[in-house]
Length: 528
Image (cartoon, rainbow, N blue to C red; front, top):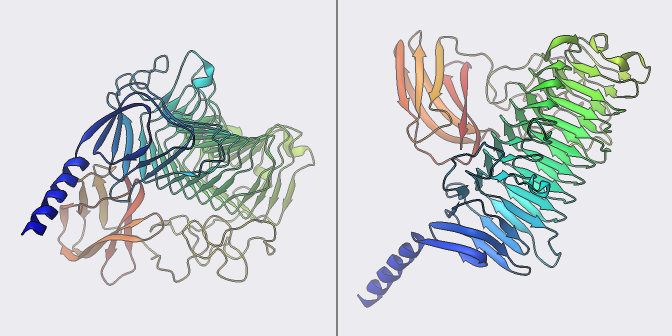
């Protein structure tokens, strides 16, 4: 009995400590295990000191306070128990003339190499703002990194962070960091006075790794609504850029950089720009751009690509299709100046070279070899709608020699990058028999509300003809999260409560499968 009593006492004590609230200011280190940590002034992890933040901790800033790091931080949450950083009152967040409604973000400034790596896993960064009368504070709404390597963000989300100038969520200068499996949503950089570079992420003089992230609804007033890099050689691999917006380069802008690594296996879908390059802009950049899919983007000039200022990108094995413009200049590609010399090899480009526009088209410097202009025949449904059908002209028609392309082993869907003798064009290799069904269920209307999903989200069905359906939810890599068993549904409207599941922030898919057929219906889900 005494042993049971002592165990119960310690269990109650542990729960009590975990549910507590602590206040912090000044120098911090050790371990945070409280339910809530209130930041009541600027805080600092001193050099050679370590702060560990346990899963589930909520770090709430009571005002515009900085989280300075001179030592090391380990903020490692779990998929179902994340760590959150946010401000207690967001009133005035979007007024860039004040610091109201926000916290000041993390600052890594010339971290000594004596400190070990800092890591953030399954963390949420919300409502950070970089503003001041002093321009040094205009960079990185949630995180500013300067001359500090060995920093990694994994499975994190960055939402509603803003900067007066560059890097709405993350600004990185002269630092080699890693950003992987993260979501960037509704971040913004720049004002009408100060052009912003990188609505979500801005890299300068940094050879970062940016891999398998999701950029959506980010914006900047200058370049790169999702991501902008300058004087850098980052590895940009297997990211999705969706519905981002900027003045130049709606999804991505590459500026004054030389290729050593590659921009590879990325999807650019429904991005837009005010002036140039709905999806991408290359400005005085010599970037290796391989096996990307650029579709449904829009701008005034160059719905897909804008190439200017003596840029010489090498573009191979890409699909550039269904991009639009509001002018008469280059629906897919605009080579704006006479000094740019882009090279195009083994791409599927709608309209072909004859549809290129801009002053550089007749300069004789553009290389255009072994490209095609044929409907890419996307699957159009399933988890990977821009994967090509088996009979697509983009299948097995990429460059025969992939030497020097720096290709990863897998495509954006996580399938083997080369499944047959020759690589496919675009960010997806043809899936073959990997499980993508063909055809869609025309007799079914499918949606989820609210979306981004909550514990109260509902699957809305409008069935035009009685049928049996099974539902699954998968992540962006096709991994099944939950399954709703096959059931008979009568004609008419139905509502099904979405199973209560804890999801990491990111993109998911709800898929309805009809019994005894290969037909499916897919709806995108967002989780915050």
